Each structure stands twice: as C-alpha cells, then as structure tokens.
Image: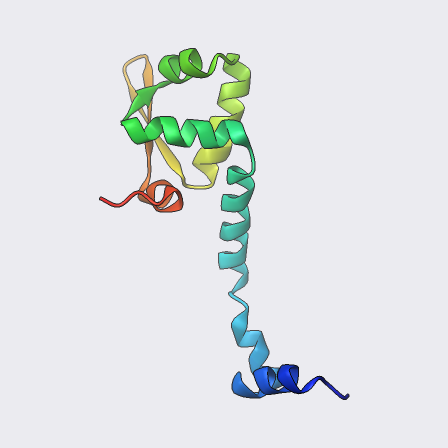
Length: 111
C-alpha cells in the first residue's frame, strides 16, 4: 500500500502499523469516556453540574431552580450519577447531591 509521506512518517514514529493499536485506550476506558460524553451532551445535565458547583444541594432546590418535573430531574440525575459525575446521599427524607472529583475535573474545577 502506498501512503502519503507524512502519514507513513507518523506511522513509523509510532513504531509501525502494529503499534498503532497502542494509541487506542482499552475497552473499559473507552466505555467510561463514552458514558461521560453522553452525560455531558445535554444542556440540562450541564446546568445541574454547574448548579452543584455551589455545593451540596437537595432535589427540591435543583427542581426549583431549573423549573422541571420530578420525573425529568430524576432521569437526568440518574445519568449523571451513572457517569460518576455526581453522588447522592440520603439524609432522612432528603436526598442530597454533590459533584464528585470526576465531575469537578470535567468542569475544570481546581480545589
């Protein structure tokens, strides 16, 4: 196969065609990245993440600020939680949500 010189050079610098596979992360890492990107692909979920930069919040506060239905909020919180961007803690009848370190990193928050 004849390749453009710059492509051939890039492949050579990586150690050849067989070594190109080393540029691809393992399946678990790719799955985790895809889940994070999927979670970040919705503006409402991004709003929730940015709200949580203020600190730990209960569902009722998030719902009030965003003016959305319980079921819709629950759906989006589940996606963010599954992606590891937020965590929840039950305190009596309250469910409190907090950004995780991964969530802070995604938003570029430095502590």
